[in-house]
Image (cartoon, rainbow, N blue to C red; front, side, top):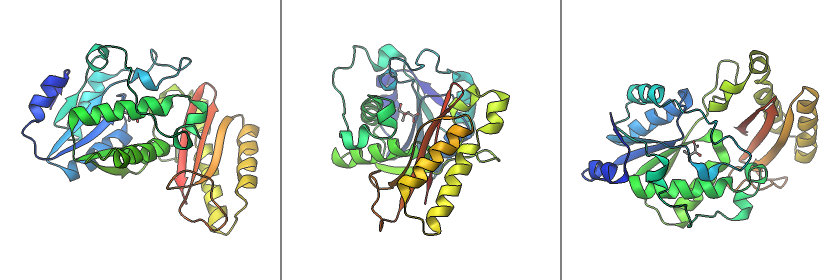
Length: 275
Ligand code: PAF
């Protein structure tokens, strides 16, 4: 496995590769990322992963400086996962001048759910992903369903900008008690870690209710918010949406997903479950 800190070096190394599968990350890797890299392995003989903490997707009150940087451990995991090349640029290499050109997804996609609580987040994600795609030029890119809205936005931008890249989705990897793996889980205290699976349990209860015919989604969302709040969480949203565009479903719509974000102590967790 070779690490490339520069765009020119990576491009040169990839020039002769006929087929590349790509997994973009911000590092601090866990089994969820490793699973995406294994999927990438199935799609191409050359697997590239990137490790870059993207300043553009952090809000002014978010933890860009505190975001965990664990490059040595990340390299171990990527090696074991069969990654061939790692693109790990420094800030100056990736953004030599402040970025003045952005990829802005439509507000109907970018300003709902996560975007409503993290203004500018999806503009930052769409911009960095497009730039990474231009640098790596993969045939396949793998994204986790854990970040469901990000996956939808990346799918849309790839299609609408006619990028010749197949977007492959990886299932969310969960701990034995159901908690979705996330870099943020490391911020949970021991007590909070025990409590954290309440979020997915609630999503599972909602899914059971929907599958048994319940269709009053606003009532279900309201009750779920009250339930979480009563257990000491500070929920941002719990929403039943259509999988395709994450808009609110009508009564007859199928192919749904339930998405949630909530704070447990200082840690903000997100999760979702397809119905
Ligand atoms: O999902 C992530 O880790 C990031 O949003 C991504 C796609 C690597 C862009 O910085």
